[in-house]
Length: 118
Image (cartoon, rainbow, N blue to C red; front, side):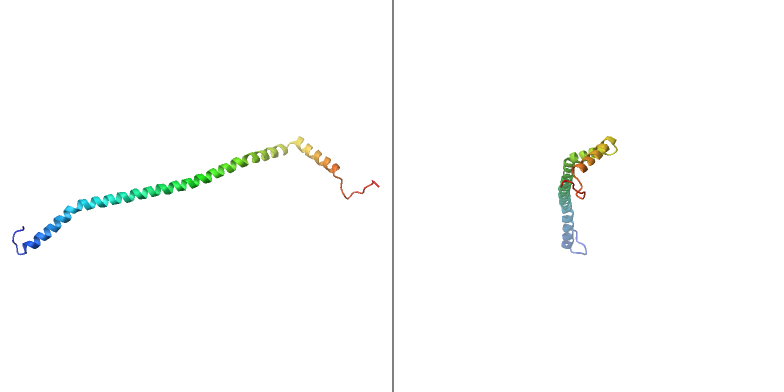
């Protein structure tokens, strides 16, 4: 109990006890707040990891789809490119194409020419 002063000793005891209680509870409350913040930041980091995995899976699906499309069209594209390179600028191939056109013209007569088979 406090010494007798011009203030009532019961009032000073009550104030002292409430101050001691606040000082005594402070470490426990601060640790509780620290644990809550740690749990919240851990939860947020886990949510971020899940979101990043979902985005990665979406990108991976798009990449795989693109790669499969390229693989399926690669054979057709290379055949077309090879044929084009063979036929362009090759005099033998151009002569063969011209002769093939002439033969096709003889096999399919022009319908406007008169017929002498009467």
